[in-house]
Length: 120
Image (cartoon, rainbow, N blue to C red; front, side):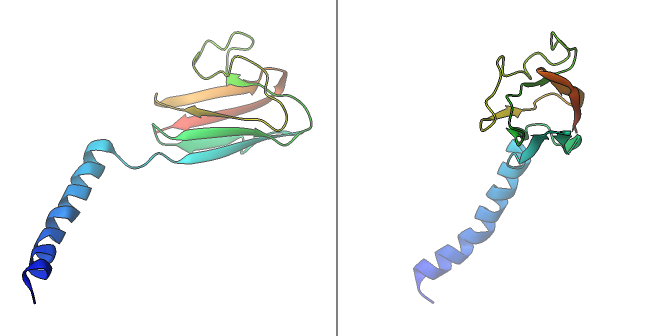
């Protein structure tokens, strides 16, 4: 075995350890979960994610929609969780949840559609 191969084999445990340390320091890669607004409401109605994960809201009904945190109509429970405008039926909006808790939300334009995001 030549010196390059010996050096490469010697570095493998160090690289593996560095990858583990980076995972522990930075945490796992954020996941993206899709929540779809249908004519019957949000699917899934309850979504459990980890802090730092992203929820992508998409519309499947042929109408505008506006996902936002509860306290309808002011969205005061998690005010950042609000696109601040209606979305077109073919438009998507993503939100990164950085606060742990259980966050109720609704479609601001059709408030019968409700959901919950549980952030661990």
